[in-house]
Amino acid sequence: QVKLVESGGGLVQSGDSLTLSCVGDGFSSASKTMAWFRQAPGKDRELVAEVAWSGMKTYADSVKGRFTISRDNPRNAINLQMKSLKPEDTAIYYCAVTSTRAYPAKLRHVYEDWGQGTQVTVSS
Image 1 (tube, rainbow, N blue to C red):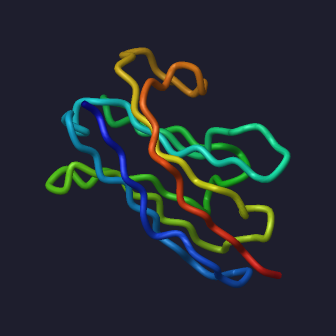
Image 2: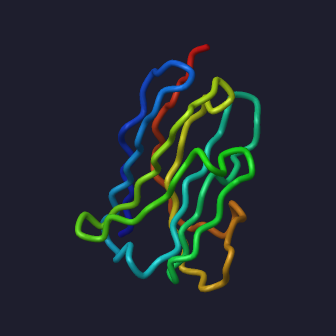
């Protein structure tokens, strides 16, 4: 049974940094495509960053240059380092995993398993 647990969210000020972590269980994260999505109130869930099974990375235009997705294989985890945070980054951030070998995966419906989410709030 696949399980994903996110941590690291919180309340920060505009310009601050925050790192999210997602630990997986029931699968090997190193061989899977994984991603971070986010959902702001009243908006659709959107892709933030994706790291493919091959190591290739994809970022939403709105976070390029500010966010970095990385693997932490010893912990069976992925991280999302977020810098220069803006109020518009406020959302619930979800970790997800897919078995697809296609790259990029990107689409929400392609991802089979999800974490419960962690809240990130950026005040101005």
